[in-house]
Image (cartoon, rainbow, N blue to C red; front, side):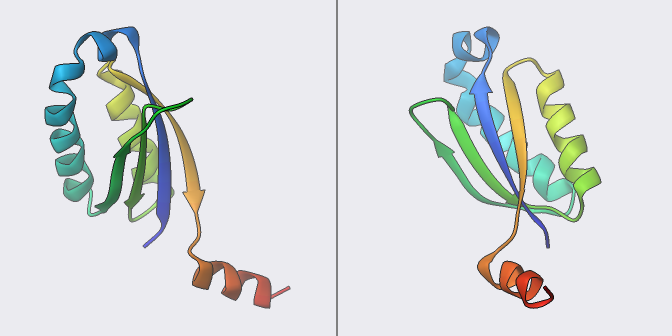
Length: 96
């Protein structure tokens, strides 16, 4: 299943309501699972991003829809990266 990394920053609304962040994380996990995926890691971080989330999802379309639905709530902004495991990348470069 394809891997995606969401780099997440809180909006002003998100940081004001930071105490509800664990519940929002649970809702995000449920949304990922409802879309046929799984959360591999959800890390709260310091620095340029407030969270880094690694998920496995069925498709780019599902990853995009999930980011859009999450962003519409107004608590976070996301940057989405598609990732390849080492084994997937090795198969890719073996075709060069």
